[in-house]
Image 1 (cartoon, rainbow, N blue to C red):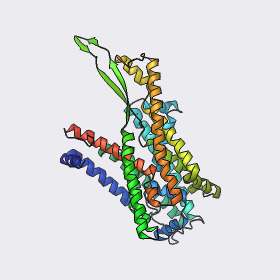
Image 2 (cartoon, rainbow, N blue to C red):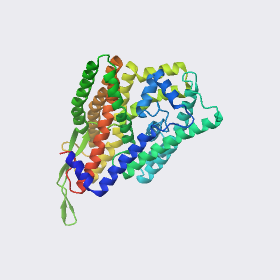
Image 3 (cartoon, rainbow, N blue to C red):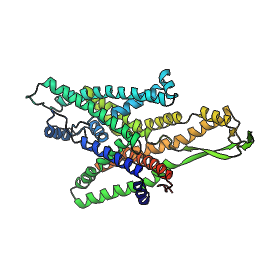
Image 4 (tube, helix red, strand yellow):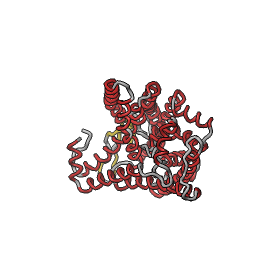
Amino acid sequence: MLRSLIDAFKIPELRKKILFTLSILVLYRFGAYVPVPGIPYKEFSDMMLQQGSVAMSLIDLFSGGALSNFSVFSLGIMPYITASIIMQLMQGVIPAVGRWAKEGDAGRKKITQWTRYLTLVLGLINAIGYLFLFKSKQYGVVLSPEVPEAFTNVVIVFTLVAGTAFIMWMGELITQRGIGNGMSLIIFTSIVSRVPSAIYESITMQSDMGMGLAITALIVAVVLVCIPAIIFVERAQRRIPVNYAKRMQGRKMMGGQTTYIPLKVNSAGVIPIIFASCIIYFPAQLAALFNVNWLTTAANAVSTGWVNWITTIVLIVFFAYFYTTMVFNPEDLSDNMRKQGGFIPGVRPGSATMQYIKNVINRVTLPGGVFIALIAVIPSIIFFFTGNQLIQAFGGTSILIMIGVALDTMSKLESQLKMYNYDGFFK
């Protein structure tokens, strides 16, 4: 791996992309510590520590600590993720959006444009909600009396919405000019940024420093043991063999080859986890917007405990099927195979092939979805009973997102390396 990284930096174009990506991520982390104008930073930080709300902790985790600092990036990437989920769902509900998804680049540009508009709307709603929440009796943030309060309110809301737009822009820049998926890398950076402080808290939470070190070392060791198993499942495939009949094209004999359709056990990657986390995160957002006692209680229940565990498993498995069916369309696959003279041995072309592919996708997706759901939930159960912050930072959802994003980024970097006849990361 080290050799491959050295090779990547030898190529000027790749070196520029890697440095550009790192620069954007550093800028993102810098913005997480720039406070919003008009907010008393120290008083707000102390209040966040005193409240200790489970729902707010969940929101703060995905913002990389930006919310607890009330920085310009407090809203994080979640408004964009929520907008993306809505647009994905709309493809099956609104015919026009469904047609856009099938129109190639032109259609994708329309979907992207509407996703941006929806992100800004959701960001505006969230910003107003946070402003009312933090000015309520629960937090009691008092704005500076030297400036008219109405003006300060407008500045705070505008800054938060602008921060969301800036994060969205940075993510798109990474995707277009850097390495990997920009939005996924921003989430990855947010989660990783919490690990050092979680390690420190894990060591110091015990009265005996030696016991704290031992528990922390044990957690890290378990995580390191789980990583190879997660990578194995992430890269596992079910290969459907496909034969192509020989046919004459002009004076040349074409076909006669054997290939396969690679169906990954986890075709959706980290998308089900991110989408499920966003749905679970939504009640916490509503609680922040309306600041109603029963809604806050419901948000805390969904954010932790048995309701959270069951909901997480169901949503991850659902989104694993949902996203896989969007990526693999059995009808289109069977139709393309038929047009090219391909067939699956022992299966009739046409509807029988389509049904066969559909059955294989269903059988493969279920164990993959259940596996990532269990990896996501089991650490949450352990954290519920121990309260160790390192388990939350290294929790199943966090570790799956980190590994999934890392593998995706390495795969894209590997494809770039092989274009220049260098060995990739995966041997």
